[in-house]
Image (cartoon, rainbow, N blue to C red):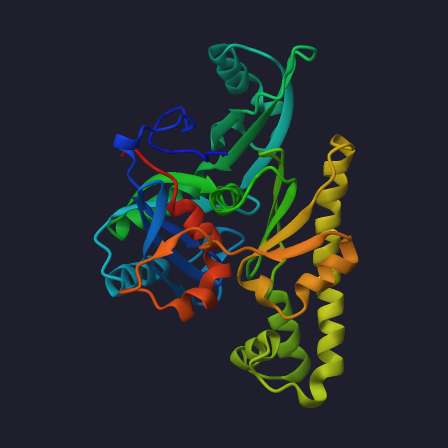
Length: 365
């Protein structure tokens, strides 16, 4: 799944680019809790990580994928670029939340021009937004066979107001957006780079306020959705239960602070919240099996800052009945040892999956 580019009137940027034209923008993942940045170059057939970093955002600066404090966010991005000494000004970003619809539809096989015309004229029946208010992208998944003349098409609609808000904010920061993608597709890109897509897997990125789910079957994304749940739920509940600061609550959540007599209360908070996360995953998995009863899922792959919560992998495995692994986005990507500390890389890795998935998307611009 390629994502979409706002450089064209018609948004898809789905064709493969020749090696001579491959240029890689800075991957910029703007979450509700922090901003993550990755920069790579191609080294032979592999990627080399040149730079990465992250910076926390003020509470409420970004909510549900929508910019609330664009000037503050722009200033933090500027500081990150300055601190990391990044000269590259082209960036790839992802959007998520209620302003984005990702839907798979099944259509009769058509020629490319006919499919494009159909999408442009008939898409209103598939999305809950006014067609004039959204950017559109789609990709024919070519699931038709000799005996079946219909194909699945992945459709993406993103509210113009939200996307243009990011473009304006980043332009004010002196940056040029060359790719706009969906978080779940960026996650698929980085998984594909490091692992084999021959397995049927559930890719799950747990951020502060959202959980991105992308089910990949036989190398094709068949279900992608964002769920508005995340690790901040745990932080807020811990803070409220014990009357402590956000920093102390974060420490307890991640196991950095001594638990002592709080263990029983913490177990209750974890059980209630993580059960909700597991139910959301089950909903997506059940929907997958409704449409793909004969293609068993092999495992769940976790990423995102929330995936570092102690015992979450085991909890999901027990609740859902699938093997659970932690994604290492840098498994096959070499790091510049002069600029990047390996200990820091190991720690920050789970949070960098989407930013890195954005950074490895080539752009002609």
